[in-house]
Structures are given as structure tokens and as C-alpha cells.
Length: 161
Image 1: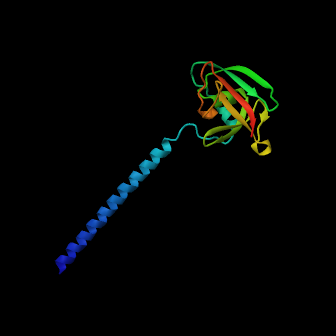
Image 2: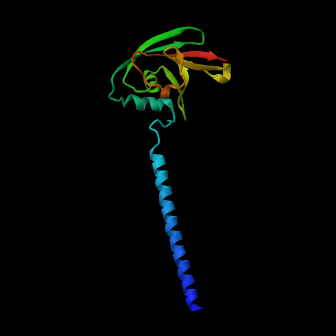
Image 3: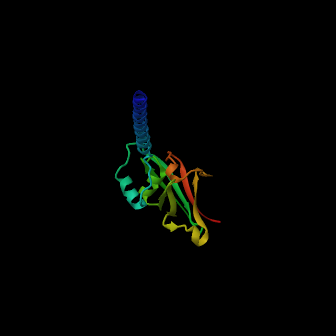
């Protein structure tokens, strides 16, 4: 009977060792996956405010080709403004913030434009918002996902429902 008990104890000890080894392997894999997930975050994480974002962008211009583009605004009263800008910025949000012609709130999807050329749109007040148009067509993406292209026209039209 003692031999059987010793064998059972040895088998139980081996099971415990195996369980511990498997547990350690699973924990190491989980930590590795979590580390990879957090290190693969996009560089475009939301900032606390656009003013701090604009100042950090102004000081870190990438060494890219200079692109010229047209910026147009149609205000609530129907008046329009057209300006031509040049930039080395890759994306339009950074270029427009750098020029000081837009402001807004950073969110999960990038910059949500609430002010253009000094005019604020407040959906809660009059259903107003800024329609974003690229080369005459309503954009399917926001300014943070729109690359600046030489010769393009980017328009904002005050719109109400």
C-alpha cells in the first residue's frame, strides 16, 4: 500500500509541477500580447486640447515636400473666404491647426472641427456643423485622416439640419 501512496503522491506532485509550468507559460504569453498591443498604438492618439496639439505640431515639422492647397469657407451668413496655403504637414488637421484657421476637440477619430475662420458651429444651438468637402466632393473621412495633396481644395461649409 505504501508503494501505491508514493506513486500517487509522485503523480500528484508531477501534475502540480505541470500545472505551474503551464500557468507560467500562459502568464508570459498574456503579458507579451498585452505589451505588443500597447506598443502598436497609432501615433495619432488624442490630445487633451487642440491648443497644446497645435503648438507641438508647429515645433515638429516633418522634412517633406512643400505642398500648396486652397482653403475655402462658406460661413453661416453665406459669405465666403478663400486662401492659399503651403505646408510640409502630412495631414490636413495639422496644417489647418498650424495656420490657426480651425479649432475643435480631439476624439477617438481625430479632430472634430467646431470652429472655422473664427465662426463656431454648435449643433445644440441651431443644428449647425461644418461640412467638410475635398475637391468638390463631401469627404468620407475627417481632417485627421485626410492627407494634404498639392493642388487640392479643402472646403468647410456651415450647415444646419
